[in-house]
Length: 284
Image (cartoon, rainbow, N blue to C red; front, side):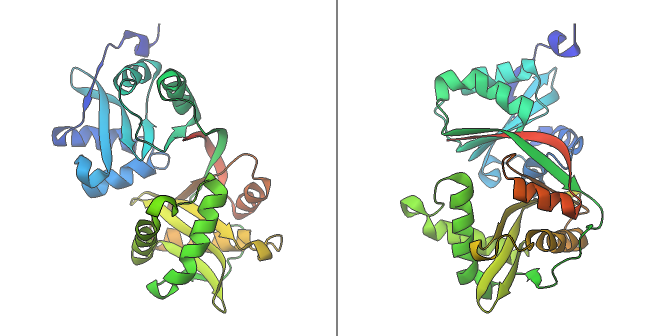
């Protein structure tokens, strides 16, 4: 019998008094947990500032597992027992997240428990290699990839929209969301987390740092303009992203990629990224 079988825990909302335990749980894997960790470092446990709720699985006020419930639903260090308890809490509620994302075993098991109430999903991407590196790239960086400025906003927004639409299957500006999406890209630029190669007013390559802590950061939105694909630009571009990120943001750089995106996976391997985990994303 495992320790998990012996635990009979309770699920409750996480408050400010639980912050030290939350931080310790996230610190157990700061690279994989970067998304939630970055928000907790900024907002603590306040749901309004977090943009979502944190629920914990406790025994005798000791925190064992968490879920972040916001636009994304993200499990943290969950076990079969805690996932069953979280599912019991989530199942009666209307789904408000647009995706589940996290380690494959955790996401797939939680989705198995919730699908009868919340399904069907629009798509389940069950095998997404989670890649990380904390060393210098193996490929020379494209020196034309630079930190973007607000002067680049009008050029970057269409590239970001195209990348997001191709990747997720829906436009981020549909339903009157264009203003909010543009503001989000501007926020990323102001943080110094948008990187791009722009030649003669055209975005050739771009990527963003989506989440960051002092220990790790996560790259998102990697994109090469369609007319320039197949020219070997992705690996040098990503080498530049890694160099800039490690010099100015965090020592470890991560991302996750669809298993069927063979060209991207090849480029990331050339740079020096190695798989440390497998993610699953459930899209609605």
